[in-house]
Length: 113
Length: 111
Image (cartoon, chains in turn brown, red):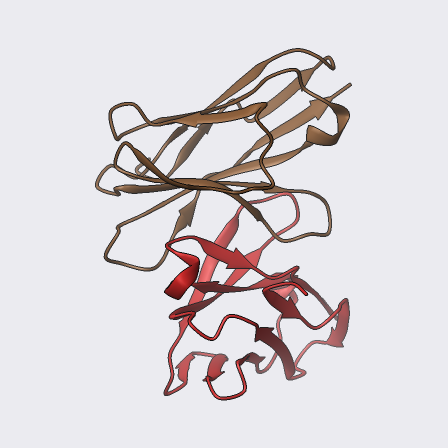
């Protein structure tokens, strides 16, 4: 499968715990995006990378959230001290910088109890 | 005001109907526009890009009006399999490289 891959697909965690999600983009894509989606809403931008550089981070993102893309390939999104309001689908997408379409992974569904 | 706004749903139509979705965007510097389709509890998938001259892909037609900052999607001869949420997306300009999504419009095609 050469599409965008996300792991895990589902995560249930207790409030206050830390969680980390992984995204493997399409191999030749140098842009990687993270989005969050809640029921009935469109995907909300969190952050994006071009290669290993984090180009933009949403001001909606608290300092409990951090993302990395250390070698310009896969990326991780960490949420520290999770809260119930963090429960959502976390989507990763990738694209070629010079192209405009982005392709999404199947997402990681986070439930904070 | 949201950067990308869509018609509120849901749209409930019979098979074979023609349905139109509208979308407005607030950032006049946006450069690229798309329609994505999202099935329940699945990831968004690109349906089509939207070009200034308008473009058609089978039963789907997308149009862009830059002067009015308005995008539309027309679906002809609706099929049951068209039932999904349709997301309007803008990208580029002074909003950088990120995609900005609308809330989405839910379509339900009934037999």
